Length: 471
Ligand SMILES: *Cc1c(COP(=O)(O)O)cnc(C)c1O
Image (cartoon, rainbow, N blue to C red; front, top):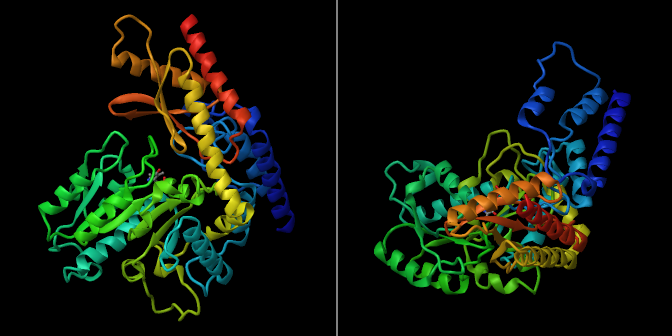
């Protein structure tokens, strides 16, 4: 057993280091097709087992070429963070320790580590120290947890106990938001039994923000209705922040619950340079954010933070006969899960590695890189800067030079150039649709992105543009 374990873990360490140390020397995107991956991985289920180290060796060999180098410095698609060294190491230990972080009695150190992580995150993000929190799998469940607490409170205000009676016969809830809300909001509403039709999406201004007059008018339509207002701290296309200071009093006047989706954008509060974008956001009732994006901890890790601790607890707490009375915070009282991974260790390690200053610097460097990449690409012949990054998100387009080229031609050209950049292996970007037009999104969330990566990225895009023009 000991020999098996040692050989398996040695192999894992060797291959992990090999993967992480060669990120910059390999194509950023996976190079293998779906058929090819199936060919290697869809093996018939064997009757006999294998030696543990052999399983690890074969797994590594079989996934080769099928992994993105997304924790490296030139991966800018979606909104994805890298992984800090201390966080990778702590995550390994989390697996080796295999603590069940459901409650203090089951995993004492894991419970207290989460207390520390929660305290530090609230401090870093400028949120109320007395707020309750939960370490969940990601932004999806952080939004779901925040909205579950919201659902409790807005119905409780109408004398309806949703935990006991459910939503059958309950007063309808409306959820008012802007058109920039994230896709995960829809699923959160479905899981919570509220359905997507309760969502009222208001138009945005040119900066991607909810407009105060629109919110006022919408809330005034049904003054007596249970209402949740969902604000955005950093949308996925342009990193837009709602004007919290202006919107918050309007929501308050209607006794609406305010939830802020700040999956990555809330981290702008970690530096004095960008904190102004979040002015007033601390007045909300709940916030959702991620650890696996801008904090650079491994998947999966998100944080739900809730000012109304009673609503949070009422929505989540689940007692069972065999649970012991606890001396400390029990995660089951705040989390949607029961047994769960002790994901607090990686967060704890990342925050300790960087400290307050290191986190501020990480956020600033990502924003500087995003700005340099977007403006660098935007200045190339055949490219157009569509959104100059305010934080870490920018947009560019590639234009069809043909006489009489239409918007559709530009859309097609944009998709083709993205495909070619990804195929070159030098950088990885994804497309998005913004204001009806296809764009290439630039999202920088990794601690690894260096000035050299920025230079290589702009050069790679330049090469693809000139190759395409020459062809
Ligand atoms: C990424 C993101 C989410 C979803 O977070 P996951 O961690 O992917 O579940 C929600 N909202 C915004 C604004 C995001 O950027």
